[in-house]
Image 1: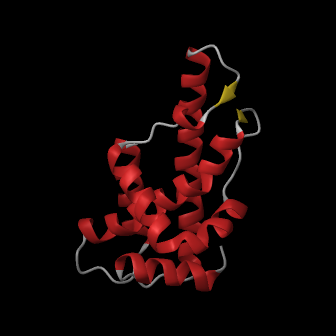
Image 2: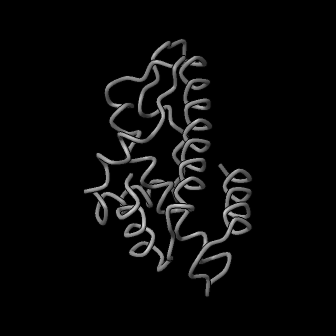
Length: 143
């Protein structure tokens, strides 16, 4: 995602001012969360004697589902940018439907991330490394 779109997303989603330095934190965050999603989806597929991950194998919680819907409503124009930037698992085969879900999952996770900053520190405007680290730990705890 280019820097201007990234900045606009965070400003619109949560009133945060981010810059190109924050883009690396963001990319690391999305990569890690998707890695975890792929891992759990793969386990579910294998448990059901399948080699191909289906969309319903992803561990989508109620809250993440709501963020995905919000992302679809507010930021659908970013789906192509997310699709181009998100990693694909080299050792897992995704169905076409699962493949189509990946940028939407990344969008929902991104929206949740942006809003989590404001929950952790309501007056936050410009996240620093310590804020990114705190939010990473929260997501790792729950997802």
